[in-house]
Picture 1 (cartoon, rainbow, N blue to C red):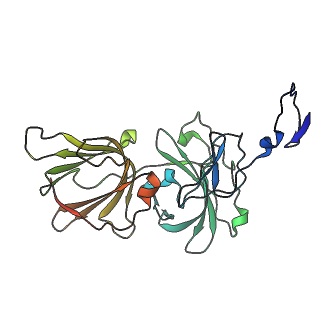
Picture 2 (cartoon, one colour):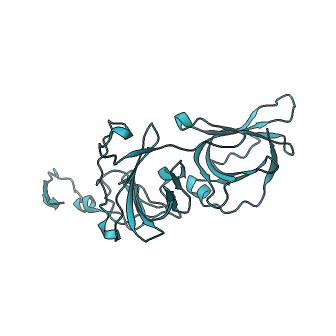
Picture 3 (tube, one colour):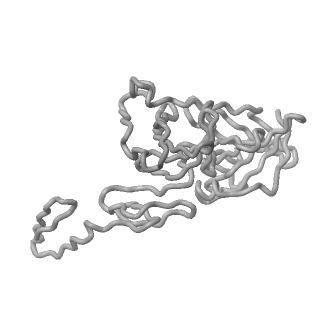
Length: 291
């Protein structure tokens, strides 16, 4: 039996067994992605263009803002709602391609367009911006900027196409005490290894004091665009005590009052990283004093 796929002639010897050759042409529908050779619906809030083929490997859905970009850096800031600031200019995300590792951006000031390619490396976030274009159609798309996985970010191109972006430092006291609930919240900054942690311990003074109630890795840390005294953290649980809620993810608001030098904390549970990202304003704050 002969079949043409992508312009290539395939010859199948069925040996008496029926073969459904149409499956080799099967592609996923709009807002579906490939997981283990199966078309799977995207999570709420994410989407994907139709056309991912089942047997070309796993793919991913796209979100309003690419997860890898979220954070505050000295010259680059990416927020959960898709807003970006680069070198003082505001941009809005128009399209995201996770598989191609690039996003299309529109500059708010003059409606010009740029393409941002990214790579997450052991050194940190490596970015490449195209020159500004007057129309979206002029942006080059996938694989327009070469990235050699064997080279460091600064070694990629002699013309400086790629640049390493340094993440900012968590600016407030890293430990705060919630006297009302006898709990201590500790932010452990391990930025050199990109593995910051949030740890909550029992500070009641009983025999099992200082036990770890909760510990989790900080996946994303973003200073709020409209409130410089608040950070939003997305934390993935690594361990928890049986008395503490064991939800996989937390959205954490950490707010600082410069006048009183005090801090407030809010935790909201989520089943997935995306559900934690989608939460709105916190309703119940825990007052705590900096230490």
